[in-house]
Image (cartoon, rainbow, N blue to C red):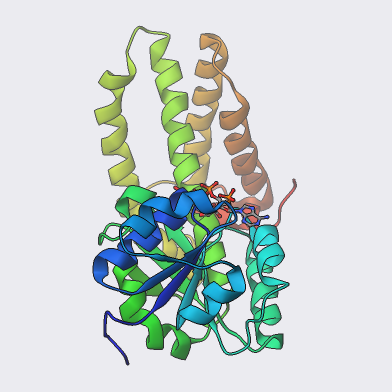
Length: 291
Ligand code: FVH
């Protein structure tokens, strides 16, 4: 394993994220070559010591490791299709679906490149700090060989050999984030009708979120076992409280879409005979979608 910070690296794509990635490599001491369609975005990095390559192909040849961070996979194909990638190592941190990641991995293999897909779970200012978690998936030996250099970007994790895993974790994390935020916004709207402002509700909501987060390992165990004994509460008890949430929302003139969706899932599960089981039995509703 090479852990020398003089390993030359390349960053293709200098949007907000690509600039942060290249900046972190430079700060860690890596000779850094950059390329971007709009060359002016390289100016600050060049002033900091980066080399601006005239073409993407030239940039690829300069680094023993190339990070790609563009808008989407289509942009990646547009840039790489006309470029020689044989013998290079590509780490594609562009957001996309798991299917796109797997297709990109097959494409790279056909063209003779080593390929890791990745997902950045951070915003640009966090890049280069331990707070920036960057997920990778694809061949483990490729990750191991480049982990020291990748480590300049943040906390790097390898999830497994399936190149689609990083994208799947990415969307799973986003689902968590948006569902938590939407639940909080819903509660904030409800309490707002009684004159409670968002800042007053926030600490209470934060406490609930923390308590619920603590349930996850035990619930995960039930899901993995496929057995859902009601240890603390039965689904039919939850469903009665869900009805209150729908009623309160209707009465307050707050949007009922989310609570009705949650209640419909519970109702379907109860109708299928799972009312006496515990909440995570709803996993089956997600596994057999009606939408
Ligand atoms: N910014 C963030 O907080 C998030 C955090 C989580 C993950 N993302 C993903 O990172 C990818 C890039 O995001 P970004 O924020 O850097 O995006 P932009 O600032 O809009 O930069 C886009 C770059 O892509 C280049 N580009 C787009 N299309 C093409 C193309 N057809 N050919 C060549 N380059 C292309 C664009 O070039 P230019 O417009 O400057 O010439 C930028 O370099 C993204 O997947 C996020 O989901 C970031």
